[in-house]
Length: 135
Length: 135
DNA sequence: TATTGTTATACTCTATAACTATA
DNA sequence: TATAGTTATAGAGTATAACAATA
Image (cartoon, rainbow over all chains, first blue to last red; front, side, top):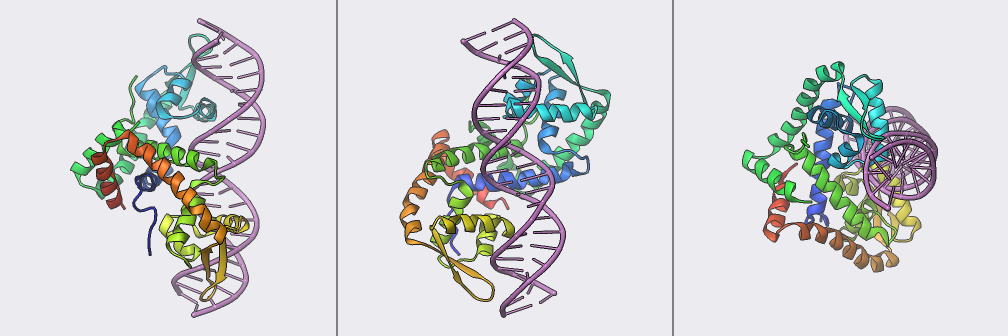
């Protein structure tokens, strides 16, 4: 059985990315959150007061698609919104959000570990190094 | 601005895969086809008489999700369906489908070239080699 | 003018369950 | 029982256009 896409890097990139997403979403599953919302939480944790647009640029999420995510996290009382410069809104973790972060990080690590288990440490480091260069 | 996901291979895998998909879908755009349907065409071209299920296993597409794709390609007269063993249906490229393949391959190559342009040939080969191992 | 937040909407892709038919 | 094809449907994620508010 010939596999015509097997010689294409693009195919394997998509294939392995899908694997990685499945792994991390499965780990997030018990927490009732999915990877995009978890990523937003981490972006706010690392940058208290960051705006929606800045998060979008950082994580490659459209401005308009940020809205329902921030709404969801706000209604869940995991983040709070405070007025910033101009029309901007500064985002912060709420106390509940802060207590949730360790579990999010653990789930994130669990997904990442599934990748690590599939390759050698040297390959892991090398892939990370090279893919970070790809823009 | 701290990027909390930057140290994660999973993040960069998804990020670069999204890039690759955008590039190839843009190349397919003028042909009015998207990457999954194009991949199915190539699978049939490389394996005349292959069944839907076999394509799904090869390309990681659910059996049920194969149906609308095959229907689409059949209605487009790019493939033909012939009865096979049991309930199976063997798929072949139609004459129209065969004349279309060169353009599909060219678009595929254009997307792949966007990846190649972003890295050195050695890195390309190395990434391909390592990602193929990841199962 | 450029940026931010927003609304509304459409499209693509994936996932699940259940059903029929063959072997 | 296992596999193939099918139907129907839901959900996640992404993309686009347009608008108001602010610098």
